[in-house]
Image (spheres, rainbow, N blue to C red):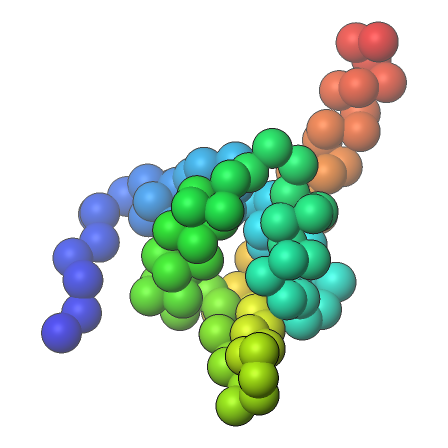
Length: 106
């Protein structure tokens, strides 16, 4: 069953990555596969509950994959899917814009 998406493409994008946590998770996963604790350390200020919730939502939306390795203790890794990787130009544009804004407003 596919989900019903907004008619507006901008609204669809915001629905998928429209909170700061998801954007920061994407930023970190653009560098490559990460474990949960690596994401906890790199996404400053996020709680374990909020990280878990956002990772689940992003997995359900097809932006990332969660791989559980049958080890003790279990090892879980997160990687971007092709769809998640396709957001790179958006994040690059946001980074470029933010850099220019910082230079002009500091």
